[in-house]
Length: 232
Image (cartoon, rainbow, N blue to C red; front, side):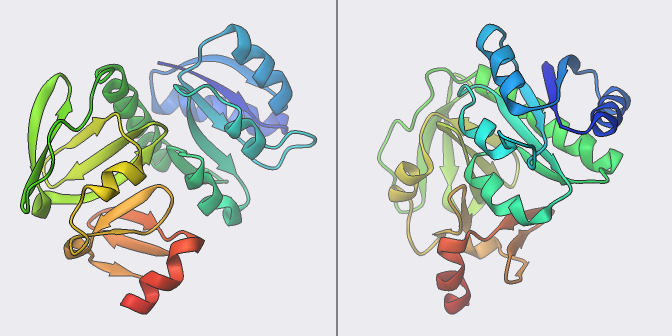
């Protein structure tokens, strides 16, 4: 797996390079001081993952993320926590606030590696059967999987795919979040942001910004927050 670093601060680029080298075996393809230079590089080179700052002059990290090839994954690295919810609308793998913790970075990289592997193995994946009242079938990793509703923790949107998190595994299938939501039983599942559907029976706690299911922190999107808080 390879990556590039995009940050307008030279010291931040150097620090990120050191952290990545300490935390993973990812190959660093290049480092760029702005989004325009990175985008030019991406026109000629295939990159798996971008560590992307947000507040940069002329061409922000959010602008660059909206212009990326479908296969390119993004981890935002920024000093500004207020962009977190916007980042998930852009299907970011993770959102790291500076100064970046090494263990937190390693967790984000491991997630990116896992998702790239899942995406590479699921070129023709899709739901293959209409759901019943208790389960539905999907094709993932070239196999057909029976998924019981009660075992699904939440479903995460990732570009043109969804990642289904169950109590035992993660499965990815080629379908957008809106389509799969229409196939689920409303009494079990609730859309809480542009990128997440949760199983309400697995909610452990929540506040005005996030829902917590086990070790997972799931952001409440602005469009969905009021309805969720009114419901609970």
